[in-house]
Image (cartoon, rainbow, N blue to C red; front, side, top):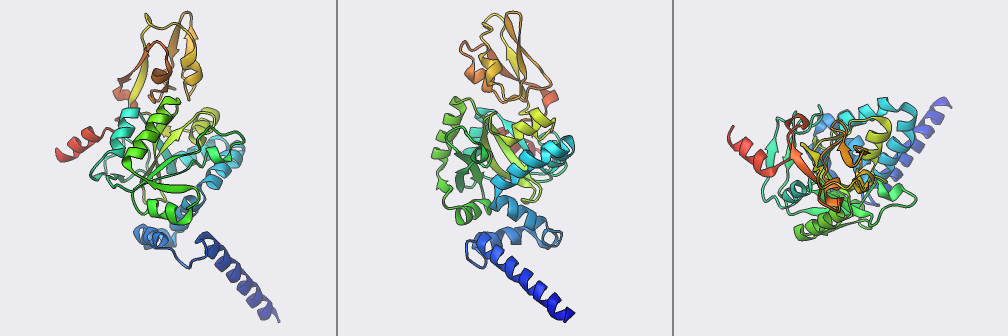
Length: 314
């Protein structure tokens, strides 16, 4: 009798797992993009469940980020925030650097990333020059009660991620051209939103997307400002104020995603430690009193020409 009960329980669990898998695969046994992702992940990731972790993130990024930032981070605070930063992190990009990545015509693989992406899981960066770009629903904005508009602003770049989004989320993602991607970047830039390149350890340890982040919705910005996580790294630049031009209007204070600007007397003051060099303040300043300057203490930018030249000189 006991064995019948055990067998029944196991059978029930197997049926539930099969139904969940078919649901995740949109009622197909195995979609081509899923097979390609599992194949590129390799057996080791499959056995230690990293492939499953990566699959869950790719399939339901909104729920994933919402759970981490909305539920786990408030409970575990810095512990969960730093755990995420070691495995899931973004590199802030200036507007010009974001444009160059989109217009890249070839792949630039790198392995020495400590000063570009200062995280242990960023072992391999591939700047993908593929024409395959998908714009998808922003997982951060989609879970806010009153999200910034538009919500379809995340750019997924390169395979197998592009086809995965198209096959698994056809209602919220679409294939776009590089010209359309550049237009989207320009529109988000004018809205005062920052660009960032994102990496995740269980997604082949590589660059997967350019996000266009607003400070009121972005989970990465919230993790940094609210929970002290180092989930986003500096662009390699820092803002500088021209005191003669500055009118202390406080526009930059409101625009800064990281709370790095304050008004001291009759001028804006930059908090060097907090500034990540996104350039939002420079874009929004009505009198052009702020500019970005290169700062080696902030790390190396994701500059395509510089990285390609560095690789060729090795």
